[in-house]
Length: 470
Image 1 (cartoon, rainbow, N blue to C red):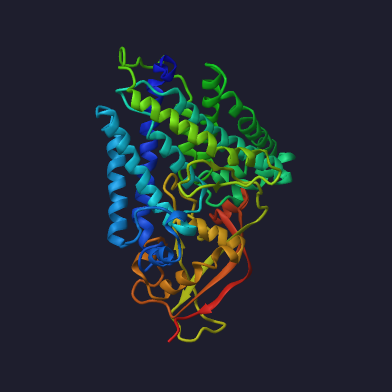
Image 2 (cartoon, rainbow, N blue to C red):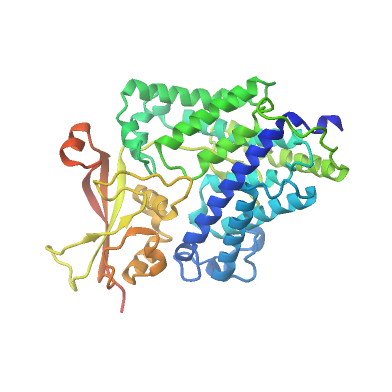
């Protein structure tokens, strides 16, 4: 079938696969370095308890019927090793079936992690990685020309990511319609980066231009991805540029980098490097498999497509336990004020009005007023992100905040590894409390005179002083 493949996308596929493998690598490393405190056997939300109350068909994976921290760590480090090898191009010279199996193993490993990750893995970029990773299984390697159907399915993913985000903004917060959301967003986003303070201090007319550009990129350019070249390449290149702008302005885990990888798959880069001369024809079994998978994805796309057209559009939702075709979106509403939880402890036996409380430091989320926000993305600081949600509403904290405080009172080693600073290195605190503050970026004058990037105002108690029950 001559229509089945297009050699013009040989380099595009190569770049996409290497980029996707790099994202997989970061995702597996993130899981390996954080899971014990979050979902391990002694974690805040232990996997064994979750598995006991969940049916396999609702969260399929490798951890039924047996789970151990060693098995989970083995899955993480195996995934990291396989991903690193793919970044180096290990699958390019392998037989097609072996290369497909390699990508399939990565997908199964990460699916197993996400499906027991509970609230810690409830972010849209988890499903995006799984959906993209599933399609990558059928993209082939150097032994075949890139299959057109899979390339189109990758564009369909990118379309839903961008168009879904654009629609949720227009339908959601009024400030997106009057172009004022970016007056607040850089300050109130979940995890600001080192340049976020400077982005926030841009003149307001530039913020309005930012918002208008966002609408153009997310509501117009995705449609052009399905037009003939070179228009599709220009649209994809513009998406890449806007994603790099987002990389500079904040920390959004691997969402931006995975979106960039998807955009690169839509670009015709044949003028940069010629494909191998006369690639062999695709095996019949491979063509049949790709056609069958395409048909299945189109059927599963009905509900996500209907969601795009719905006035009650939902964002970041999976419609099946395999996360094959999902709904995406971001920042349908933008907060006008930044709330932050500050967690403190004391070693005094009985807290009183003059008690000295010492703050726990977090790696990414703002606590220290004089500390410039750091760049962590594409690495994902799961606890820091959930602390941001907890500051928005106690409902987000209900499942895990109590166990978190308990582990601080025990000086739990794995939990403390998630933090930047433990004020009680020698012995655990006697009491821990949490207080809610309003944070705002300082002005230029405040920064020059105080050296502080943030200013904060006490709002209320979030958790009264708590100690371990005897």
